[in-house]
Amino acid sequence: DGGITQSPKYLFRKEGQNVTLSCEQNLNHDAMYWYRQDPGQGLRLIYYSQIVNDFQKGDIAEGYSVSREKKESFPLTVTSAQKNPTAFYLCASSIAPSNTGELFFGEGSRLTVL
Amino acid sequence: AQSVSQHNHHVILSEAASLELGCNYSYGGTVNLFWYVQYPGQHLQLLLKYFSGDPLVKGIKGFEAEFIKSKFSFNLRKPSVQWSDTAEYFCAVISNQAGTALIFGKGTTLSVSS
Image (cartoon, rainbow over all chains, first blue to last red; front, top):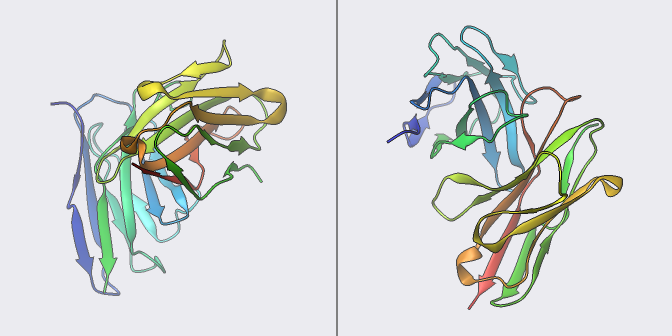
């Protein structure tokens, strides 16, 4: 089945540790995105990538990093510099830049910092 | 600042009641508009979208939305809700003046009682 796979689904981290969330898609989509979802805050854009080896910061990129070495993969690293990392993280992809198409979302990864 | 506003944080309705969820945006230029839905425990999925043409668009499960350019609005409607419509609803906008990633509103939680 085609789709977006995020792992792990649940992750616990101690303060001061970096953690990497995986996002893989087999839809052959060019663009990939990371959003953060908090109760009452909706979805806020962290980073996005239109093509391999290129990515742009979203509204809340501080404390996060990404890479796009392969078309199908867009991992997100939550660094120790992120002040409030406990959240639900959603990865998405689209055929083209999303001003012409819809986003397809993964199931999400819930990160809890202890 | 460019933003997407959803007027209602939580809406509670009885089955068969009519629904209207408000969405306003503050972007200039050409916009594409979306409504996404997140049922409990499920992926975010596209409900409907507007790119151009007839400002009244129809989506899945009997939902529709009307784009009113003069009011910068894209309100979601359904004539008669069902218990299964209980979900969180997100309005999203992309503007050719705001980059190439969807910006989401904060969401509206709809609770439908049977």
